[in-house]
Image (tube, rainbow, N blue to C red; front, side, top):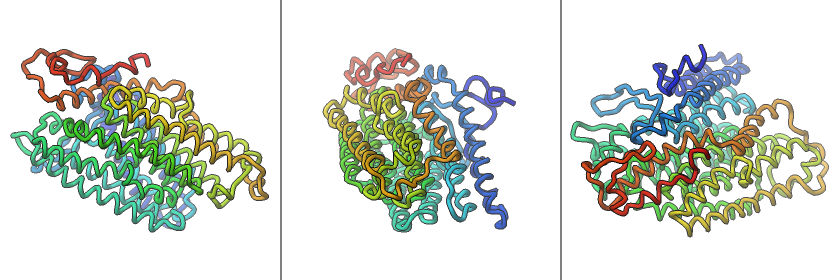
Length: 554
């Protein structure tokens, strides 16, 4: 049976594909855990099989996602596709409610494709069975968090990813792995405690009169919280997500976690787990608390831009190549925070695209650094030189991925950053100009590191550095293809993302206006989103925030 027959032709299906994307890797983790101890060689192939099945389902999901229906969605809530909704704990209003829109779609695909690649292509060196099981559970929890439309379900999935990542760092990392894993765990748990309190408060105080609910769409439509209560809840949500992003000064766990994590752990941490923070700000911060988001935006934009500059300057001072890449993530995630709180369609859409592109580029950089460490047993920049002459193919791939991270036009990294900058300039011009210097600083620290590691006279050990092997080339090939393809033709990402971003901006703008439009006022349909004629006359700035810079033709 082909994907079209399985999923249907309009983005809706009787087959619970989102549930399958969660349960297939979860079942795979259980199967791997039950494999006989006498056959540890089976763990990675079996795990890669289950992860690969989920990856194929995710690609089918993207293929069948109905962009036309997304563009015609009357509200943000109705823009979700492939929805599965079953009662879970009815007494508390908790349900198993999952769905995707243009904001979450590509993050689900990214997660489901990257995990099988690193499972198949990266050797953990010891204890492959628990390593594979934890990776599969990490995949299941991450996808679950990206598709959850129930606050309780999201919290469960948000916490599920914590344990596997902690154990992967502590069990398969480098010399400082236990300290790094503990620091990661403490920071994330502290944020999660605030998140849990805020979720309960939002559900109890913000539910409709018909009864308590944890349903995201119902709570967002109800907007039942008093202004000060909503602001306090938003602050708690925001702190939990900003720890996960992370932003300065909540970022100190990230360089240690990245540096000490095993290669596959670093890839998944950069590509997937950091996006739980920025995705959470979009899906739960802006959607649940539009007025509070508008109120807090100046502070959060400032924090994001500080992260861009701080991350870039600190990266330039690193002696460890892996730590340099880790600090580059702080800078890139700062760009995304700026885009989210610029409140324009272009900036938010660019932020979502940058989440995906950062995962591709930085994930590939961590793979390449891990491959270099396997050859030279060091990541110290001053101990490496002339790698290009010994491993020209490796150097060529590294150059391409590095340039995509810098944001060179024609490669994937350019698209998201460009959209964020041009979209943010409309509403945050000063901060946008400051953030633009981060692009220059990124070129500085990455090109300088490349010059020191790959150019110059090689030492004896550097001359013996092996070039990329066939298996490593196959592991890197999907990243290289994505870097070029999404740089040259980003339309699939833009087409899916723009309607959801536009409706989200509308939602924030309408609910954060000083005078909300009267429900009796005539309705005007703006590219699929309901707005009121009175909104512009009230001077709420809808025309300024909802822009067509990206356009339908992109």
